[in-house]
Image (cartoon, rainbow, N blue to C red; front, side):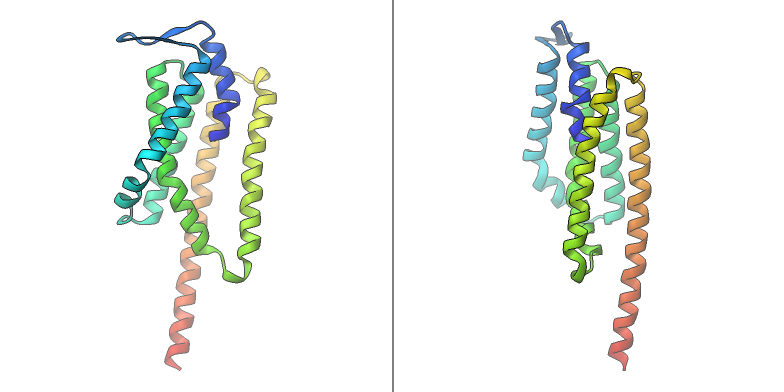
Length: 194
């Protein structure tokens, strides 16, 4: 999703803000599309840099599954709004959601990946994870190619579909991981009782 910001969303912002517009009625700063993209990227970077440890510390006491769902929700809602909004304040508010979603999501995703991967297959799983990361980056290029022929509503719809699919897949992986963990615990108890 984040790759879309500098690709299709960046081009859309450049088109929408082709002439400088006020950032807000009460802020006497004019911005164009490139300035808006720069503000969004800067906001994301500053939020991630300043709040990583605080968010990680606060979320340690909550269940991974709940934290993951909240992170996914914030992340996808933020980027979905960014994909269609033309109001600078709404765009910056949506980036706030997306950035905090990213802060929540990335560490939990890495923890889950580390926990579900069997030790003997760690390299294979990490290779597949990296492959899917490259596929995600490639979709940004595909959206960029198709964007001139896509209606404006198509990108938010695709982002929403990706969000639903991601939640379903993570939910499935977590439920399978829980079953496997319970099975391993039972087997270890059997071995100890013998």
